[in-house]
Image (tube, rainbow, N blue to C red):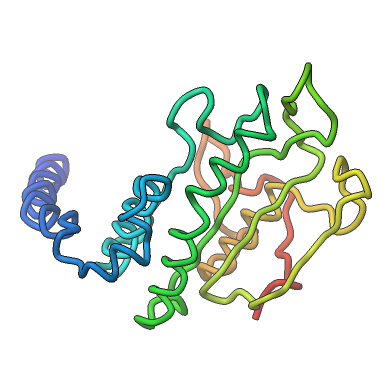
Length: 217
């Protein structure tokens, strides 16, 4: 019975995770100097630094996909700066700068960066003009995503906003293009990969998307 076998394998995987997870999540196994490099000794960077250090421990244990989240700490401690961007943005940016730099350096020093693709992204940027008083509204016209690691050309940039940082002036790139590029770096042809949905074979990039070759090593 294939369903029974699948359920047994699921339980076996859960048991293995219960055995392996405590060791992987135990940050006390890391040195004090490693804690400091990720900012665990500073209240500003402690929370995100812990997430980044945990991400490295998962990556070196062959976890294939790791998501590190920034910004869920409340109305005034996230990237959605509708209220007062002058005070909110510098504060949230300070929480991630040191930890993400430490993660990149740590992965590279361990020889893990060449096989790991790091993606720093969001769903939109902020408008260059005020919303109400000191806030900024959502802006889908232009924002920044950076990639590092496996297959990415170090120091390369692609695209440019207008002088107001409001709309894209050159190298307009959509989410389909980002997805196509990520799939390419994973060794997957986005034009051939399909999933079955409602009786139709659909691509993850729909009928759109091109690989941004300018950023590839």
